[in-house]
Image 1 (cartoon, rainbow, N blue to C red):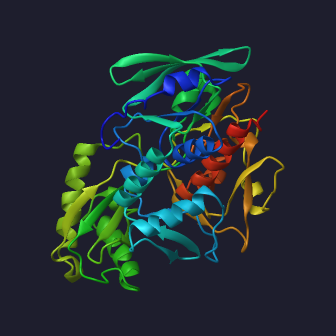
Image 2 (spheres, rainbow, N blue to C red):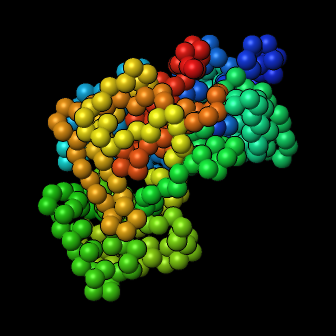
Length: 400
């Protein structure tokens, strides 16, 4: 599956035809989609995992996310058992640099995005019930009597029809649900993130209090006109290797201009090189623009900010979450609010079930939620829990 479209493995069509309700269609091979596919396959379901990009891995791999949030609570304990815990174990076994790390009151898993892609790619390949197609997408969804009936796919340069037992939109931007009815999707409400890796930095370049001082220095340079306005919300973080620094710029997805950004990054590098810790710095990889909120579906239940703060429990809970409300407001920038100590809230199945359409679900960033509730639930570790919980229920037939 590395960078090319994966072919259906032998026998998939025959097995799918023999399945009473057809295969499970999972749209999007990011955190939620991969977890959903893996859990469903382990539960005995035939799964077709569809990814419009050239490779699997989603935002973590493509946008160069090196700190996975939502896997641990503030005490460092795993939030969700099962696949999220197995993900931690696989990543740590693959790379000794992978390790839990404290950032403020949170705990994240430090990981090389390239290692994450390779580990999850191999994991998918282990499951014989998963057929993964990259460079492919859903082009139409037909419903009958309020239920998903048929799906039309673009697979490479050709077309294909499918009658799935259910469809899960894990695209991150509700691309599949929009095909049914655009009114079923609420518009996104958050800045996007662009990560660029800088190499050649001095060891400990961001060690406290240097990191805090650098942020203040960058803000002052923007105010003085020495750096572009795009750097105003720049957030630096130590990388995986000793000489790496990850720089995250937080931008409007609608206004993003890739060509202009290249000029901004060149100007930023020139400015950084004036500092002793960055005198030998070089621009490394630049990630794809990471969209934090590409739109949220209208579900049978809309997860509320109050649910998070009250640690609400649901009878139809799919997974738990505890990440802070990390809302990158389009006008006001970041609004970070920690939940009360020890808080874990449930994400219910109702927030993943698309309103009025049986057999259609959303998992991951495009779940049904208020903007500030989504700002907590959207992180990759929680998306792994969300996808795994939904996939398990779908394979077992424990859904309405």
